[in-house]
Image (cartoon, rainbow, N blue to C red; front, side, top):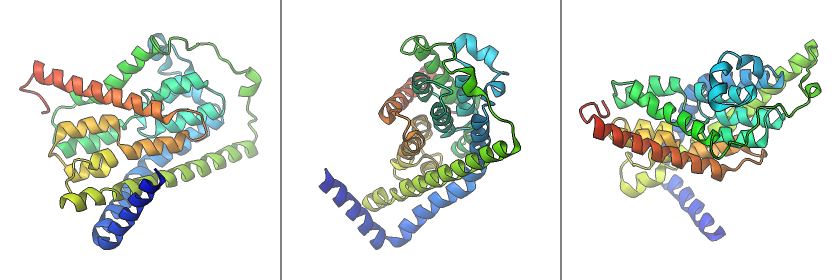
Length: 307
């Protein structure tokens, strides 16, 4: 296996050296997407959420939606917080918040496994403002259900089957939840949250550049930049390349998230004991459910399909 890895990276290095202009284009695409899309839309949420987790303000934040989510999902407030951030703020906030809560023992390992099954998705702002206009889709609600309704239903199904053992009682002692409200403590928590968020966003940027650069290989082999593997490698750059040429394929790729998203999730979960293989398995299941959903849409209403 080491020989295969070595040969692959030697081949990739050779392709970069022999096709420098194309490789520069793909690397620059990843860098621009990271700088223009990810930093302004994700970094503020990472910092704010990091501060809230460190100061243990998450239960109060989730109190507004908790009365609606608790009867359905039967989870504690900190789990509800991770669900809200994962669905509203977009990938990879679900993984980042879950890892932060778990590392501070605000949720259990079992609750973290449950969250990672369905709460790490593409953000609705990104989906509505970038994806749907790029694909030239006029309808909104059917696509929102396919992107977010299915994971919510999947999470509900898992809660009452595989994860029915989750407890609503709080395992932590009250003493562990106390926080000193001294000015120095607050500043220390803010500084720690900012440092951790900047480190995370730099790591995510590296993954975006790397996986966009890998588009160089199918480009060289096929002679075309419109390779169908592009969204599987890195979703945003891949969607830019395909535009509206294969909308159904792009929508299914969004459900999966792409290999770059999986690598970024691994970066967020590293050291938590959470399995990236289990996470990937759940993403494959969600992609299959999305395929079934769009197939049923086609059968029931072919005139409105993918409009």
